[in-house]
Length: 183
Image (cartoon, one colour):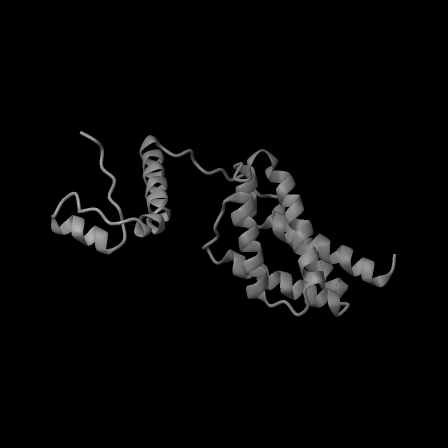
């Protein structure tokens, strides 16, 4: 095994440990956010993140953060807003830099430290939504559908408002369409 292969393997192991100890990915996999193949998606994600570093030169943490954010959104329908993605990206960039500079001992120590912290982790599950939360999610989905079709509605001739109340006028001015039940 030559030095570059060794460096790649060490970095891939670092990516594996970092992502597998990252609570966001753990929760997504443990709770099936990625569907039936969530674990396989997580393994795939480890591979593509490692390759991303070698295929792009001089990556900065924000680029890595954006890349991982897109992967999480597309594969796990998950958006991270707790600040941990920025920390993870910074750590990945730092470990990659250490690997490129030949500081393998430091990388190995970091990997060992992270792996040791992960041995006692408990499985975290997201509670199932209540009936009220499910109803809210359905309402949000309908609102999103209405908003996405609003660009199509603008192309059509406008019809007179259903109501001339100030509320109805304000909603139309803001670009929202109010959907009401038929009587």
